[in-house]
Every structure is written in structure tokens, then in C-alpha cells.
Amino acid sequence: MKVALVHDWLVTYRGGEKVLEQLATLFPSAPIYTLFYDPKKLPLSLTQREIIFPKNLNRFVGMRKEFLLAFYPSIIESFDLTAYDLIISSSSCVAKGIIPGPQAKHLCYLHAPMRYIWDQQKFYFSTYGKIPGLSFIANLLATQLRMWDVTSSARVDQFVANSHFVAQRIQRYYRRDSTVIPPPIQIPTQSPQWKKKEYYLVAGAWVPYKRLEIAIEACKKMNKNLIVAGFGSEEAKLRAAAGPLTQFIHSPDDATLHQLLGEAQALLFPGIEDFGILPVEAMAQGTPVIAIKKGGALDYIEEGKTGLFFSEQTVSSLQEAMMKFEALQFSPEILYSASQQFGETTFIRRIQKEIDTLLGRE
Image (tube, rainbow, N blue to C red):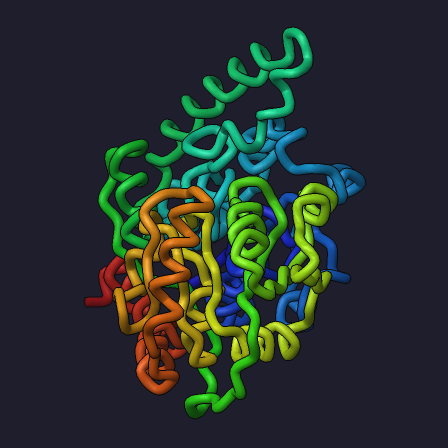
């Protein structure tokens, strides 16, 4: 059986790439098709694979991806996958829209329906409204892409969603059922025993929809130490909003991030995420999470045991939850135990079962 893997772009090593990395272990000989490729940003486990990408397009690898949205459907459809019996796409943009051969089976692990044109369009295209005529063009493009996105969903034989939040959107936008399989994280072999320090943490991409400014403002008003770890386009804006007790750590490596997660009082999670791997990684390090009560966080945060929710994406709502948090105690062992269901072995077993079902092996 010939197998191909498809991923939107390989230019960072974040949650989606870690899912692809685990999928790749199931099929060591499968090539990976992608739109952009930057080996400097990826681990050897991926760069040692056969990576197939359009060389001419790769000159734009550093450009903001939404600028080329209009071209992605045609490019992803240009990949010749007729020789493959099984295609597994890892998609948050257009990877699910590949054209499989007439006899091939296509399983799509969907991280989210295309964010640029569905529920997060306002975040990605907000600046276009300031340029006369450009907002109209952006909306027209989004309409055309939504039509393609819905039509191309019929090319998928089986959807796997990374959370119930994403499964609901798959049903709403594509009218398709899906199986929910959370993304994998590396679980420590035993419950870490970090010594807690007097700071809160927000981490991840510094981009608008993460709403990190809510955490920054809440900690500034409450005179709380805050560490902001990550990188992204919002860096200047976030630094300008920060108070004297806020520290920025740019692009921490995995060891540093795990230490930051383990020593924090809590991870603040103000963005509505499709799943959100960082909160589960915090739990694995024995640290509770204070999260907005929406999105993927509903799948793993148990109020009072693994964290707390706040109801609105406002500074006052987060402050209220933080004050409640400081009157409670959380068990690192319970948090660590709750993270066990998200390990790599569990992920592989569940994905393999979906593949076997799709291929009629069960």
C-alpha cells in the first residue's frame, strides 16, 4: 500500500507539526507534500523525510500566509497523488483539498476549518478595512474560498477532529461527522516536582486571536508578575501594553518552556483555541490553567481540579478568575494524572484504529 502525507506548510514546529510527526511514524516511507518548506525550523524527524513542495512558491516562504490565499487551492490541487492508496492530510488551511485518485482513501486530521475565511476572518483581515476598496476584495475572496472549502470537503472519506469544538464546526460548515482524537503531547515519565515561583505565564504565538493583551492588562492592574513566552507579529503592541512586572521571553526552547510551565503559578489562556496543546502541557508539568470557557479548553479543563474558567474575554472577567484561583490549592499529581490521556502512545493507537476502519480492516 502506497501512502502519502499532506500538510499545509512546514515552516514552524508547533502543534500541527507535532501531529504530523506522529502520523509520519506510522508510515516511515511516506512522502510529505506541503506548500512551503523551511528545514531550519524543523526537527530531524521531519527534515530527513522526503518532502515534496513547489520550489517556485517557496521563494515566498517568509510572507504572511493569508497574502497568497487565493492561489492555495490551485496549488494543492496540482499535486499528483494518483499513485497512492491512502492519503492522510493534516489540515488547517487547504491540505484537505487535495485530489485523491479514484481508488484512494483519504483521512483528514482537521486542526480547524480554514481560519482565515470562517470564524477568525476578522482577526486576519482587520487591517484591510483601513485601505479603501481592499476590504471589499478581501470579503469577495473569502466568499469564493468558502465555496471551494465546502466543495473540497467531499474529497475526504473520514474526518478526524482535534476537539469537540472543531467537530462542531466540521458539522456546521461541511455537514460531516467526525471522530474526535486530541493531539499528542510528550508526557513526563513521572509527575514533575517543580518549585513554584511568583509569576503567571502566557505562552504561544503572539498573534491577535490569542488575546494575550487581556492577560497582560489583568496582571498589570493586579500588580502580578507575568512572563510572556513565544514570538509573533504582535510583539511591539504587546510590549507597549506591558507593565513593569511583565517579562518577555522570545522563542524559548522546549526545555525552557517546560521549566516556565512547571514553575508558574498558573498558565493564563485567554484565547479561544481549536484545542490548545499548551494547557495540556502545563497540566503535565503540574500547573493549573485559567482559561476562557470556550473552545478546545472545554475538553480537558475540569473546574477546581485542573484549572478554572472565566466567562468572557475581558480583563475584569480574567481578574475575577485569578482572585478566585489564589484562594484555592491544586494538586500537581492530579494535574499530571489528567494529562495522561493525551500521550503520544494513546494518539497513535486511536489514529491507527481510524485508519483500519477506513481501510476495512475491522
